[in-house]
Amino acid sequence: MSTVQTTTPSTATPEAPETPEAPGTPDAPDTLGMSAAQARSAVLEELILKDPGRFRVLTGDRPTGRLHLGHYFGTLHNRVRLQNLGVEMFVIIPDYQVLTDRDVADNLTEYVEELVLDYLAIGIDPARSTIFTHSAVPALNQLMLPFLSLVSVSELNRNPTVKDEIAHSRQSSVNGLMFTYPVHQAADILSCKANLVPVGQDQLPHLELTRTVARRFNDRYGDGTAVFPQPEALLSNAPLLLGTDGTKMSKSRGNAIALSADADATARLIRGAKTDAERHITYDPVARPEVSSLVLLAALCLDHSPLRVAEEIGSAGAAALKRTVTEAVNEYLAPIRARRAEYARDRAHLRKVLREGNERTRAVADATLAEVRAAMNSHY
Ligand code: TRP
Image 1 (cartoon, rainbow, N blue to C red):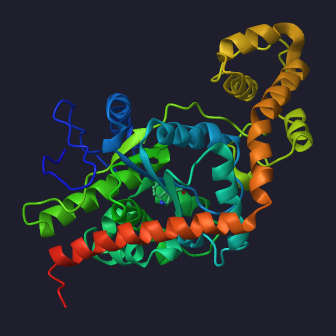
Image 2 (image 1 turned 60 degrees about the vertical axis):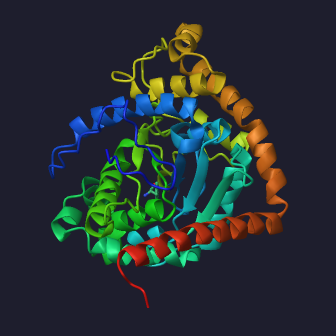
């Protein structure tokens, strides 16, 4: 961890253990980095409770569709928690990132507005948190250029998350934005000088790259002072929810329950969910992933333990489980859906939220770019 003081919220924490560098071997999943990140996240949680004001979070979601329960219990819920604890938050809608694996970003305006609606509905408060889009913040995008000079092509080449996305992409060739988007993501985070990034495991390599970019920039241009903080990963301990077909919940697979879905569509999706042949309901994510994911979903909505939910259903079987899940989800989402419908009636308000978020972020990113220019001696 850097001991250099920065002017923005700093994570320099003498009492905390150092976060070791991830080994970054190309093919082995980074399990050492993972457990270190978990341990560090527990320490960070305590620091947040003690002094939320020292943290600035940046996080976001690609505008490629509506947010669903996997997003909600995976990250969105946690964002609202952090915001309500008093952590300053920037939520990016990375519209350029949509172009990493498709030629044209379809329905972009609609998806962006739907994301803003989802955010407002779950409790992201634009008075306390800043929602913005990539394309509206020129200084953020300009940072990408010096940052690209700080990473090698082979480093980009061995990013496991990018490799995985390339492997699953339906594009016939890989475009340059796909290859370099982790650097773009470093610009997202560092343009706002965020020092905390709530992430799932797949985003850890990107955060590691962001830290590398920050460190190299400071070393190369900082002249003794750190321009950038070294942002840290806050790993969520949210258990993984599967889609209704038993695979990863994903907007493109038709197996996701959108926050915005109505109660009937929710019931239909859950009724069609995959289960197994064993009648007695138990919670056993390894041996019975589909049944356990349904149990977990009910448990999250009811705020009970999964074991209790499974026990209460017991020999009543999968149909009873599905009834419980449907009721729990619809009840949990009812106030969120009601707020969403309310906000959806006022498109002008939505656009204003985004316009003001973009303005606020431009001011922050402009100030960062001015520091970067000064550090790089670009005084003309
Ligand atoms: N890559 C992230 C995703 O696909 C989205 C994202 C873009 C992001 N920029 C970010 C997340 C910065 C955290 C911080 O989900």
